[in-house]
Length: 101
Picture 1 (spheres, rainbow, N blue to C red):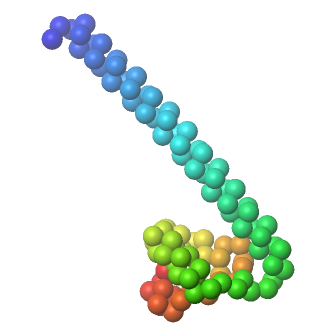
Picture 2 (picture 1 turned 90 degrees about the vertical axis):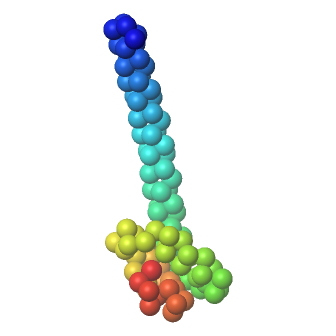
Picture 3 (picture 1 turned 180 degrees about the vertical axis):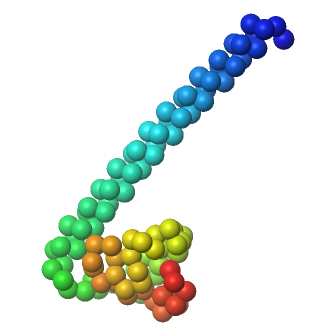
């Protein structure tokens, strides 16, 4: 391979890396905006409850617990097993609450 061809291949690789980085940054920003919207929506909805406990069916609690478990310990700073980050009272099924989900 000649020196010019090697330089061209290297430049193509750099352009590709730049494009991938730009797309990754855009996806990350849009995901963060979606998360911020959902957090704010939860705050608004919890405010409407006016301190009352959120009534969930067992199936709804189970669905939330499965999602919380998938997040793992990383989400531990957002909520505990008794309340969510917005202050709404949510009781998880004992099966999940005893496992620190």
